[in-house]
Image (cartoon, rainbow, N blue to C red; front, side):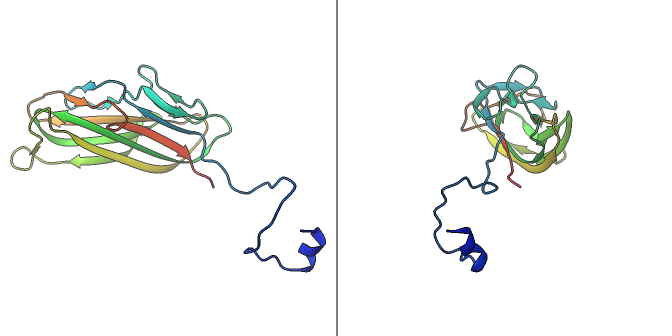
Length: 184
């Protein structure tokens, strides 16, 4: 379409346009983006907030996810500040009745988003998943503004009546941590 046609007529956005130059400012990409899972089952101590070892990367577009021991975190790369969406899911099993079981997203070392599975008191309010063959799975999601260098990690706490440890299930279908920058 000639420039003089645009100037002399209104544009009908339902028309088809064939551009021969470069179109800028349209669309966008949701990167950085990543997805990590757990490579082998992880034991977590009773009533202890434990960093989940998402050690297996499915993808990491900007090398912003660190999957090494004691890190397991996404860090906002330079020039990538903005709004991000994160989701984390953990599948775990335990032999004891549970209370105050939750999954947390941590920002820069502090909990900021929590999914509380149950918060009860000893007695009939506690729920029992029976044995290690029974599993529970819960997730937490959030959108937040991040600055360069901010980092996100996932923690799980399972408090049991008998003090037993819990097992977080491995594999991409059981436990995962992922996120991406939102186009704004």
